[in-house]
Image (cartoon, rainbow, N blue to C red; front, side):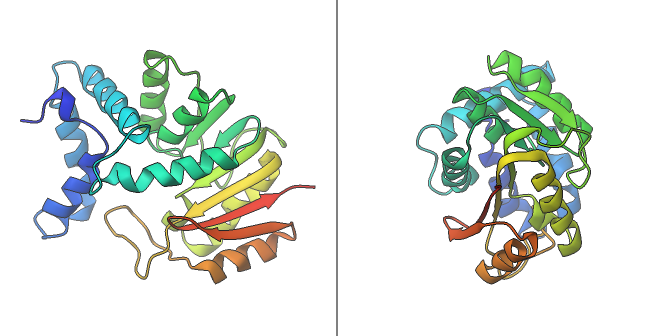
Length: 233
């Protein structure tokens, strides 16, 4: 049985390597298995989730296991944090680890995701962690927030989960919501990673084409995946 001290986001990679990739667990059952393992580690599910968050944040801010999922996330989150100016709005936040990092750095943060359960979980865990994060359930293609809501709007490892036209809609929505900067990050993959729910692949040229379509000044860089940064006039 996995104990509270063992719970962190590396569990996702372990499940993928040991059960999904060999064909033991279908990709569509991944989330169910993940939640069952986490919540089974304590009598009170919130105690298990708190341990999961606490351990993951400690790993992401420290030295993760080189072969784990956190080691892949750490440089992406560090780069996103370095690019964030002023207040931040994260689209597709999932568990909200990046939003929590930004809050810890002193940025006013709003985190959104389309999955109500994930947003509600983040809303419960952030206060226990002592980190202020506003949460909103929202589809990133149409966020119920006003224009120019935040200085920086981030879509980090989000649009690869969407078909190309929907990804463009997310970028357009991010531009509407941003006062100063939009940060888009994607993995560079030859094939979409099915376990993670990826459906669209990107390379530097596809990111540049996305930037061209906005008509805004932009930069495309490669740092543990691709980055499109749009600066608003």
